[in-house]
Image 1 (cartoon, rainbow, N blue to C red):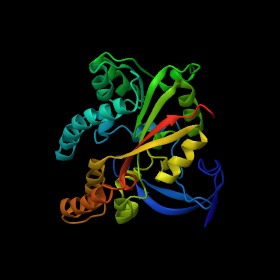
Image 2: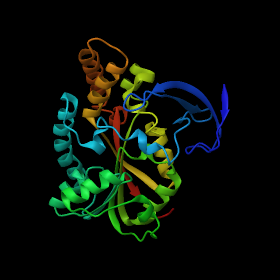
Image 3: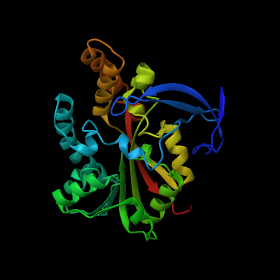
Image 4: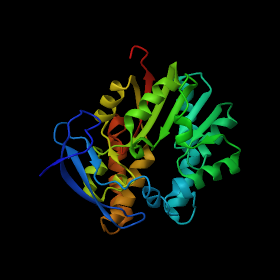
Length: 300
């Protein structure tokens, strides 16, 4: 069945969609949401995402670790270990792309990435939409973190060498406004690093509607590598590198196996995660989550 959407597809501009999946919010509400695909290009979005007045309720859970920073439970303890390791890997990637030290992290969460970069000589600033999370990061690390509404009211002035969005783009309502602002806020040699789940990954195909990284309704958009490349070129960015996020293959697979009722979930998820990770060794764009390193195109 074809649905007319009130908003055109952000990838190709068409406005007819078809329902392809019914996904459950396993983190907070237990509600179901439709994931629909553009009939022209296949791009997927979540249908019926709650409005600004209520969407915040879907983030208020201790299970949502990027905001709560909880270490309860095995998966969350593993998350903390992986995060510590990945902070160094992200810094090394950034240093390999640009010598610039002025960095903005959009969706800075609990502030651990910003603090790590600050400790290594970067001039850092953050943007975080959740007030409680933003305040905790300021108090814990004495960081400069703004509300998005305040930041984007300012005219961008090529202020940053690097802008990062670690698992944030899939949450953003107005992609065009954000990316246009980011393009102007970067220096001419500036770099944008975007990490998002890959809904064309092996683990996504194995678990279908149970795939944890659909994460409805928090994830509005569900990208493939082709979607990202098309979107970024339209907004004046050239792709310079793709990097796999190997631990995401295991995390997403283990969570998905539990949602799908696979028993034992640790074996089913572990095996799927291993296959997904192995699949990305020579093709990082096939991983469960991918980092896209993008360079500003000054000819835009």
